[in-house]
Image (cartoon, rainbow, N blue to C red; front, side):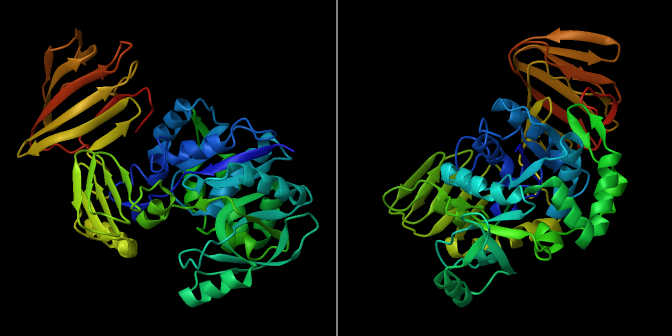
Length: 471
């Protein structure tokens, strides 16, 4: 049996604001270790017997970051499927199933969200092996997490009778998030498990059940995959077909209706890191129950999560707090109130601000840029261009630019002229002039860009040519 991991890397993770944002969501961040959650998910099953290269499903805005993070850990994915819009898990998995079935008609899919923590990988592999015995016979397996307490933030799965294979059970029912008293009764009953959102099933069986219970999703995704096309190293699903697809979860579309569902109990040290308090629980803590990261000073602090991204953060005489600092925002909340972070994000959207969308450092396929200062008719950025990186050939209607090379070598196209600049050299790009910046060297290129003009928005870019095929 060949098992194909399908890593779902969509979503914005707003509950972990201000660190997680729309352009850089939690699955692309190093939250628990020095690797991102996407990288940890891919490495979890790398080089395991019968496990194939992963298929990554993500949104268009995250495609270059996902590809670069796979390259950094030395894993070449089977493919990267790009969703033109988010349509929840049932369509995302259906698109992956159509894609895999065209490669291997007997493909078995291991569906994994990219933003989960699993501390006991050996136990997880054992659970996969238990499920595989039933999946070969046409079962759709879900992994039920053995609860460690009466958690009200998760849905539950109630198991029924023992299935034909050891450690597998029929699914009696899926249960919505309960109140505390009900959750406590679930834990005491012993046959309720947290719904992990991880699955193992044959692609053809999932599609057959989807056609039975949610035919509109099955047909729309079949068309979207049938009309897909290559874009560099990515596979773009047909936009019109996928956009027209109904939005639904796997549970609602299939698992709650099929007669072939089974649950495999899994005691694997699992967390979906759905809040700052959940992140505190899975991080290493000091003798006072504090989890810290970055340049942090603590004095008489207990039970707290303190994270500093760009400067020293000093916390004194408090307990059970979450303190998260980024370059442009600071969050201070009691651990019991972190679910209200979404209210901050809603407020930023209402006020048409940008702190929920992106950080001051913005990643691009050629490197990144970071805002340093902004004022009336001017903006200053720090730009890094990776070796071999090349910005698009472009022009601006409303701004001029000054570039000062800090380190590295820059090849600058300005109109018909191409100039090579090195450390401490500079150039000027007038308004309306066609230009391009690239790094021909073997070291990163660092430069300071000073923009001046009547409008400095990122949408004032007219691209004439782009090696990354962006619009």
